[in-house]
Length: 320
Length: 266
Image (cartoon, rainbow over all chains, first blue to last red; front, top):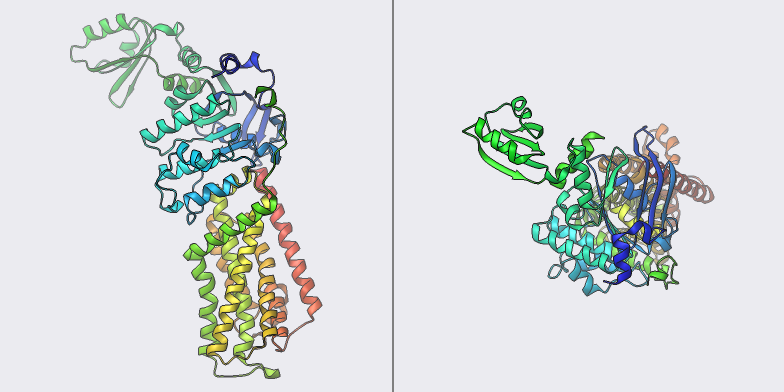
C-alpha cells in the first residue's frame, strides 16, 4: 500500500478536496409524495470502503440508484468522476452489484461473465474474475441451477467484470455462508488496497464494522452520523443516553427483578426486558453488578459486553 | 496513478457492433434453451395450424382457387409471429424488469438499444422458424402448393411482422405490472388473433367484427400474407403498410412514456 493511499484513507476529507463520487443536497420525492431522501450529501474518495447503514426504508437503495444514474433526483446534483452517472464513460469505470431476484437462468456462469466483460475496453481477466468471486468449478452451470450464495457470487463477478474504479455493492453478502462471506470481504479489502473505491449497503452491522473505513448512517432520508466504525459506536453510545462511553457496558441476565427497580441501581441508564432476558446498560458496571447480585440470589445467565455497533446503530436510528 | 484518476483516459471501447452481436447471440441461445418459451412459441401455431388447417379441413378451397390449407398458412404465420413477440418480449422483458435484471443491464455500459434490438431479433428469428415449420407441415400433410417466391414473401412478412409485435410487447412490458404480464399477454394474443380473422376467416364472422378488425395490426399483416399467397384480400397494400407503421410508432411512443414514468418513480 502506497504512502499516498494511507493519507487518503486516514484523512480523506483534507487529502482529496474533490471526491470521486458525490451526492450533494439531494432530495428525492416520489410521485406519491413520499420523500426518500431529504437534503442528503455524501462524498466518496479514492481507495476507501464506505458502508451505508440504515434500517429498511431509510433511503439506502435510493441513494445507490441515484449514484448509478438509474434514478433522477428531484433536486440536487450527482457527480461521478466529475461527470454524469448516466454517461457511458462514467459507466465504463463503475461496477454495480444490485439485489437481483433472478438473472436469465438458462445462461451458463461463464457466458454471463463473458457478456459483461464484453462491455468494457479492459475487462478483468476471466481467470482472475472467477477466482475473485470464488466461482471455480461451477463455471459451466446454468445460472438457474445455482444456490442462492453462488448466484450472489456471480453477481459480484459481474460488478467486477470491467475492473472498475468505483464499485457499488447493494447488500453483497446476503445469503452467503460464513466462509463465502469472509472470502468476499477479503476481495473487497483488496479492491480498496488497489485504490478502488467501494460503497456498500448492508444491514449486517458486523460487516460494516469489519470492512468499512467510514460508516454513514442514514435514516428517513437524512445522514444521521458519519465516521469510522469506532466513532459511530461512541456516537451511538452517546445517543443511547450515556456520555463517557468508554465505561459503558451492556449487561444481560435472567432475573426476577422488575425493570423500575433495576433503573434505581447505581450507574444504570437503561433497563429493558426482551423475551425473558433483562438488558441493562450501565456506566458503572461493577457497582451495578454488585448490587444486582445482592438483590437477586437466583440471577443467572449473566453476560457482560461492550456496546456493539448494532446497539449504537439502533440507538442512533431510534433517536432521530 | 493518482494524477490520472480524474481524467477519463482515452479508452478503446469495444465496438458497438460487437456488443450488439454478442447480445443477439446470447439472447437467441437463452430463448432456445428456455423450453417454456421456445416450445410454446413454436408449438402453439403448429398445433393450431395442424388442427384447423390440416385435420378439420376437408380439402376446401377459398375463392380464387387457393386452398384453405394454404390460406391458413398465412394466418398462422402471423399468429406465430405475434406469439413469439408477445411471450418473448411482453413477458420476457417484464420479468427482467421485475427481477431487477433490467436495472443491472441499464447500469452497465451496454448501449440500451442492444438489449431491445436483440429481443426484436429473437422474435424475428422465431417467426422465421415458425413460418418454415408451418410451410413444411402444409406441403407435407395439407397438399399445399407453394412457389419458392411465395415462400420467400411469406417468410419476409413473418419476419417483418415480428417488429410491430415486438413494439407491442415492449409497451406491455413497461405498462402492466410484471406479475400480471402472463395473463395480459394471453388476453391480447388470443382475442386479437380471433378478432382479426386468423382462426376463422373474417367473412365467416359477424359483420360488426369485420368492421372493427382493421384496428388490429394482425389484420393488416394477414391481408399482406393472403396477397402474397394469391388469396382474396381486403383493403389495399399501401393502407396496410401505413397502418402497421402507425401502430409501430404508437407502441414505441407508449413504451417511451411508460418507461419515463417508471424512471421518474424509481
